[in-house]
Length: 140
Image 1 (cartoon, one colour):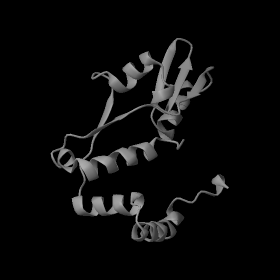
Image 2 (image 1 turned 90 degrees about the vertical axis):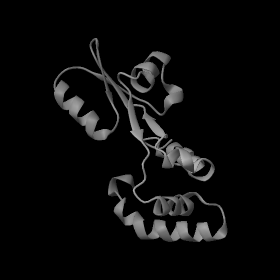
Image 3 (image 1 turned 60 degrees about the horizontal axis):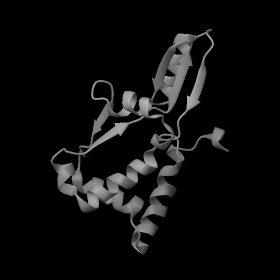
Image 4 (image 1 turned 180 degrees about the horizontal axis):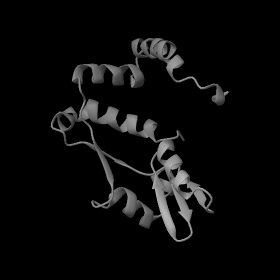
């Protein structure tokens, strides 16, 4: 699984772009984010949705004892955690899908997730050109 669920997110958004683009144009598609980490310190539970948020929680807890549970996705979450973090209208995080440039966005989805020979060549070219921006020596 990828760190933040972006692979599944990209696949679902591709489906919406290809099959239901009107929903995106009308601003009716949202992404419900689930936390990557559940941090427990005594009776207190904190949720972190990314590494910077996790760092802030850990800084706040400093010398206290805590446990960190890494979530690999919604399928691993207990129903009460899912309700509290992802489904509850009072506490969930929703990201509205609003592309800045519809044509460019569609083109990018086609390059990254298309399946004909032209898409594969374009995807390889894109990865070759952009991978240096994401290279982290720690990944080796």
